[in-house]
Length: 178
Image 1 (tube, rainbow, N blue to C red):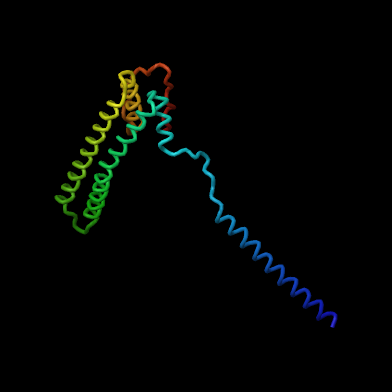
Image 2: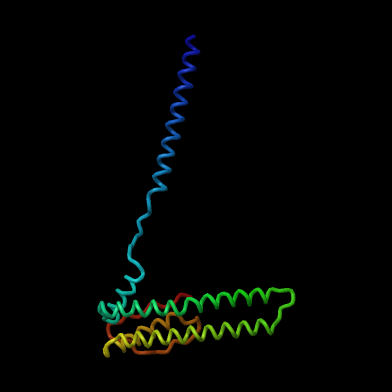
């Protein structure tokens, strides 16, 4: 009887330990799901852009508000065009992958994409004109230099970079990695 009692006691003890382990694991798992990671820098994109525009161009809060309005307008103009470009590219890809591709159709789709891209460039140029209107006389040259730097950063590899004198106080960007 002593051996049977010890076995029952051990089985009950093992059962209790298993239940406790399951509860502990469930608690840990539940806490991990409920804890949201804290971002390293809780700065929204507009905050970084505003900081950059204040620092580089010397814009005030009114100018930043106007910038936000112009950016919103640009987004409303360009989003449908971007969606159409994407649709046309997908259609051109599908036409290219067919068993007997129709080159006339593919060329027409490419031309349509080019027209939509030209419209995007027009919207971008209008946006730059509106940004220029936001600036004071002193800020217009800073804006031109700032936008020129952005264009240079986005140029394809191998394109020659025009040598332009840098405004005083501006640092050189690091060289591109090969």
